Amino acid sequence: MVDVLLGLQWGDEGKGKIVDFLANQYDIIARFQGGPNAGHTLYLKDKKIVLHTIPSGVFHEKLLNVIGNGVVIDPVSFKVECEEIESLGVNLQACMLISERAHLILPTHKALDKASELAKGMNKIGSTLKGIGPTYMDKTGRNGLRVGDILKNDFLERYQILKEKHLTILKQMNMDLQVDVEETEFFAAIAALKKYQIIAAEYWLNEQIAAGKKILAEGAQGTMLDIDFGTYPFVTSSNTVTAGLCVGLGIAPKHVGKVYGISKAYCTRVGSGPFPTELDNEIGEKLRKLGFEFGATTGRPRRCGWIDLVALKYACMINGVTDLIITKADVLDGMDSVSVCTSYQMYGQSTKQFPYDINEANLSPEYTQIPIWDKALSDCKTQSDLPENFIKLLEIIQQETSVPIAFVSNGVGREQLILLQGN
Ligand code: GDP
Ligand code: IMO
Ligand code: MG
Image 1 (cartoon, rainbow, N blue to C red):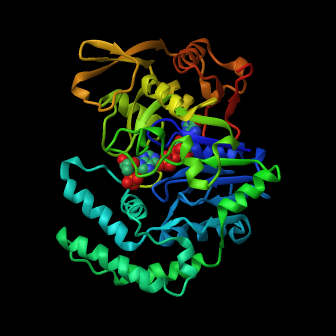
Image 2 (spheres, rainbow, N blue to C red):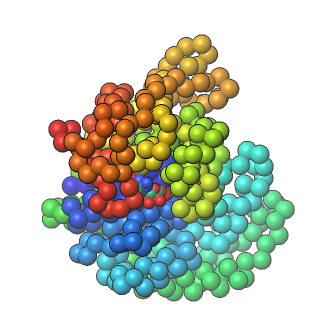
Image 3 (tube, protein in one colour):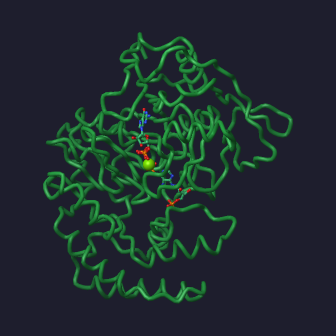
């Protein structure tokens, strides 16, 4: 059986914390897409850890962590991340398995990412510049290099062919590049990658399912960044939705059980692209300050706004969410009131459908306002502690999405999570 946990907004919903919390109910945590563009934060006692490619179950003993075929790996940043986690006493050689089918990010993929963003100018995606887009392009273009290839005799030759292809493209884009230093680093990192267990993960995972083991698939990014269903072209280059786990791990849909969908109690986005409920004013700044909304991977300030239930309902539909988890509720404690977008006004009409192409000039969110509660959510321990006005907010979310809320997260710590009974 496989449950999946994924973001329902534009990423950074708090997936790392929730995976870390749920991890002890599972035998295996598996990443199925994305790569070092992800930044998943969790706390080990008081120490803040940000994971990029390594699954968030890594601090739980007895758990195994899989990096699936759908993930793209940058050996250089992966080596740094592994060393950091190993310095904390985790034996990654024992508890981490990597699919031989996962694709490799080359130094020239990162250069191509930069060149592409430069060429787009004002229309840039706001990419993390980790080489994600160009690597997935080579994957679908059938040119990519995979983790399993590093064990083959012709790896160097194949690397050179792909590198030369990239350098030619870069030259056409007026970027004459030397990658000697990066290349030395890359090959040192490839040698380090060989230390870990590289396996036929699709066979291994299916054997584990047959043996009755429980797997939690950990999504990266969020539904509104999905290549098919997100705010294209301002998206990432992978399928971040539930269906992505089947192709990103080699697990058939019939094995999928619960779908945990995570949403903040408000909304953020980092990078360019439409964001209907964005607050480009002092209220948005307050949310950023109270929620400490700065990118876990790039440090960029995140754009902030109110929760958007049109987008959330859409995300629940695409993913088949069975259990909603609302995070960062405590951040709203500091606001004067809370607004919830329940529909959009578009071309003079009210709609609850997320449009194909958002033209923000012709769209205005329609809000329901909720007065702020009289008791800090950060002090609440159980459902019965929750203030009435916050319960009203939860009811509106459930009503609009038709999905029950399973948990409310009210702090960064693993234990700062309130289970909602009867849901
Ligand atoms: P992810 O990419 O979905 O794993 O999320 P990030 O780690 O990028 O960003 C979430 C941020 O919010 C991290 O700094 C978390 O420590 C923090 N966080 C998670 N849950 C809560 C919560 O309930 N309350 C508060 N105040 N912070 C939270
Ligand atoms: P986690 O897993 C938030 C955004 C980038 C950019 C767009 C494309 O931590 O939630 P890419 O580097 O993929 O080419 O960037 O997607 N983005 C994220 N935003 N959280 C993430 O991951 C993100 N990964 C990519 O900011 O707008
Ligand atoms: Mg993040």
